[in-house]
Length: 85
Image (cartoon, rainbow, N blue to C red; front, side, top):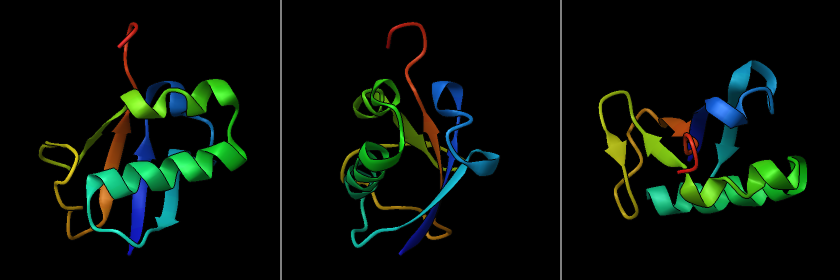
């Protein structure tokens, strides 16, 4: 599945237009988190990668967690922790 991740906060500026496109094999938010961590470990500074376990994921209408399914449109927002978490 092809997903689009809009990056905010401390993750801005890491990719062009602050939008990361990834192909993932899973269907849950946990699968998205694993995919973005794997990508980040190869492409981003360590301090930014370290934020990913604490990031929240959201669709255009709600926060998404763990085993919740990826929205059908494949569009997600990645929200890093603010002010320490």
